[in-house]
Length: 55
Image (cartoon, rainbow, N blue to C red; front, side, top):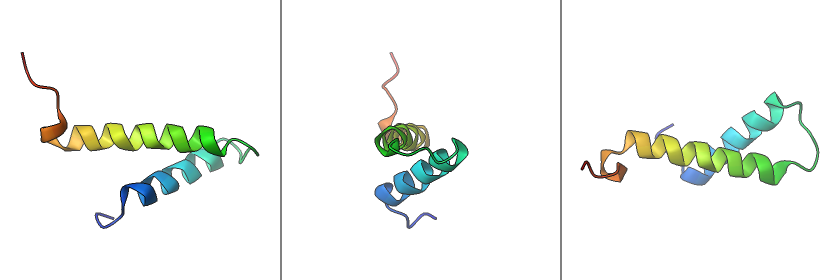
């Protein structure tokens, strides 16, 4: 899955979250934003160059 784009990863995660919550209608933006935050956090943890500088 390394070839997945950021958007594809977000889309997949948002869909998983939506399913887990029982597929509520009208909550697409909430799940998209949650997925985007989770993917961004994962990327920061996995990329040492994006870590805050040590004091």
